[in-house]
Amino acid sequence: MSNNKSIHEFDFNLICEYFSSIERQGPGSPEATIQALGFIENLTDNSRIADIGCGTGGQTMVLAQHTRGSITGVDLFPAFIDIFNANVASHDLQDRLKGVVGSMDDLNFSLEELDLIWSEGAIYNIGYDRGLKEWKKFLKDGGYIAVTEVSWLTDERPEEVEKYWLDAYAEIDTIPNKVNQLQKAGYMPVAHFVLPDSCWTDNFYIPQVEAQKIFLSKYPGNETVTDLVHNQKHEALMYSKYKDYYGYVFYIGKKQRA
Ligand code: SAH
Image 1: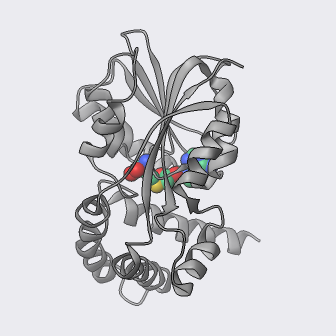
Image 2: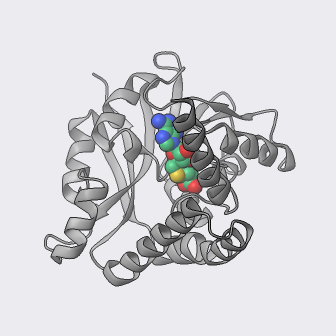
């Protein structure tokens, strides 16, 4: 038991170290964050915002610089939250932004406390539909949710990519079906847009090429590291081959009165 646990923790630490070395832990960009924010109305100095699955806070710093009010970033991994809070200090945002360790399936907010729930590249951890439904109780009436979620961009697709995604995340679906789920979960579907290719390449896969080189030379022969790098390279390859068929989509909804 204890042996397994220590192996598990070692793997976990390495995975955290790898993703901590890049600014974003998922596809996205400051421009996309700002574009999504453009659909959110009524934010004031008193607004309460949560960024769920915030990682090291790449998008949260942008969110904070373009909103007023106070923001809480929540992530499961303490190592990410440590970096997040160091980023908060270096951006001089500590009076209205803080990162806390927590899980998205057990959030510590009060009922109807929040004006805005943000979550980029993370809601899949609980599942899009479940996240939309469970988090709604923390939003005020008329509050907003803005999430990015992997989605099919076409009705049909090659078998290889279909199988790849159904194994990785069976909840992947087409944009109309995701918008429909948003509406069924009790939100007005305010807007949605597909993240441009640069969100995947320039901000996610290209920075990883350098990170992989450093990581492999720091831990020569380490199986976890080799596997992780192999896995990330495969993911990038799948993206370059099949990017016409899937992408990340920003979905923005406004909580409807029950
Ligand atoms: N929003 C960031 C990170 C996306 S990666 C960005 O766009 O760059 C997904 C994040 O979800 C990771 O930081 C991971 O630690 C976090 N995560 C995974 N499971 C979680 C859970 N149950 N609760 C909270 N965060 C979780």
